[in-house]
Image (cartoon, rainbow, N blue to C red):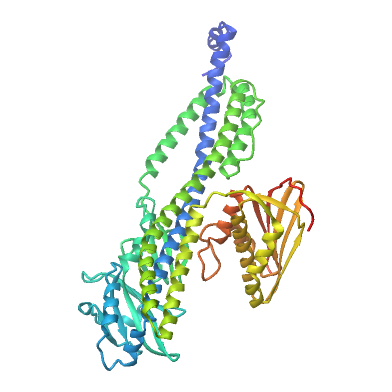
Length: 569
């Protein structure tokens, strides 16, 4: 208890007898406790939001990557099914299905395909759904009683039936089917009975049991866990795009074993800091007010950092240790922004690099074998129709290899080999390359600007950048339009613009368009613009996208200027 009597004086006298140095020592100690308590509270409040934002961004990136893996897995199986359907022996079997025996070459080919661990069996059925042949024959299945209630998706020529969940110690499966046609009429169906766990295991990288659990959700009716079994619904924390119509990934909240201990320690620290501050608040009230004024910029800076804005500096003119703290905070803010940006980029590139290497290993090796086999068959084949089929197979192999190369180019882009490049020659060559495509789409291509403009960058990279942007612009004008490629100087910099008057993109799509694997098309890998942006930055440039729905899109690239004198053309 405090009073105006002698007891209060007895409390003050020892303090008054302290010399000035000791007063400042004790005052600095007390003043240090208060900002530490305030900073601890601010850190606890805003760092949690910052961490949640970072985790959310990482989860979204991993969801997009996993959805791309599942999409690629299904595309691989569809390509395998197309190869079977396109075989002449397959058509011959259904055209003469009274003779239920398979030709030896077709039977051997189907047995080789069923050696894949992802395929249980290959089924050949008539147009009424009656199974004619099952390869291997010992894996013949009876049609389940609830066959008509299974989810069914028709996407183009491909039909997916299922999934059928594991039951009675039998594994789960689903069917991928495609019709066999002769003279534009369906004469039969070829189906791959797929191992359900092979699809769900693609989500293994998302499994975090104590944080969230990944599910594959089919039409909001069937839920699959990462091991291919039935999963119970839960609280959804995030979801992916549909990697196949009606099929998507959903993250369900798991057990958070760290929440209660973390909350207890947080409250304990806050109570301890608050108790220390309350014990000293009366004695150093004036000092705390002054300290609060100096801490206000730190609070605002911490709030800006929690909101993801690392560009708000804190004034460094505070006295003593507070000035040092402000300078240290500014250094921490700058380094934290750089660290977070580089860390996210490194993790994304590492994940993509691992995925790209896996794809190259798992797909290119069998593709090489298939390509060599097709090449050998073409050398000995005399029938013109079969040669045409083999050419189609070769072109599809080349298309798959191109998609793999595109993914590798994003994950591991080549270093630029810079040289002086005349922009006029590049623009003219790009115009020639896209002329046929533009003509088919009723698009008029124009090039303009300063013809003597010279850039210092990788010529191959520049060609790929302009070609990607030009083809995207043509696709954005399905009803025809105008494509303009323009080059000019602007305050010592070289500027390239690619403009179209197509459908344009909305603000929400524009914010996501440079993300890897993001696409609004029903085809493609979603890496075109991401690779383009990487190549621009690798050559020292920047890229901006301006677009308005229904009016068109303009992509502006700015590169360092080159002081090279050339005559006008």
